[in-house]
Length: 194
Image (cartoon, rainbow, N blue to C red):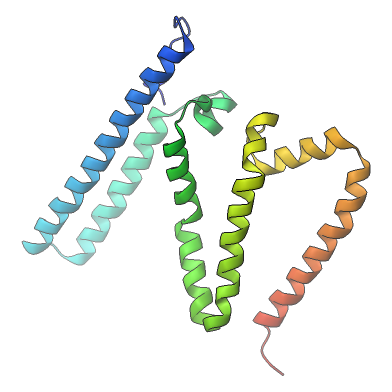
């Protein structure tokens, strides 16, 4: 973030990392306090007669303004700063970000819709989604940093190039089979019974 980046003339990286962590703690504390205050003010305004539509508009405006502010504060042209904040973010904050990524609105709504549409059978999808996410986090994520890559496709591309071109011969049938299975299962779920 603009105010959080270490100075280029810093004496020691550990001092700049500790200053970054202190500043990050301060930003998170302000964000949490501001969010709690915002919710309390809206609850009081609702009790005083503010309509639900206006509360919705205020939440929307606050969200857009918050993300715009984060974008302005975090502007950077360095890929390492953009993807991983220069690799200075502590593990607890990375864990919170990863959990928020897994429990995004699209995932939450999609899982609720799956349970609604398929009932108990929809749990298989949710368990697969969660198990797959845990497997990726456990077996793939540690090596992203080691290889210096930022995304899983970059990492897998670098891994297959680094090992040998013969690996693609083994990956291609697997990918084709997975896509065919996915298409078959999707068509069977979406097509009406005959």
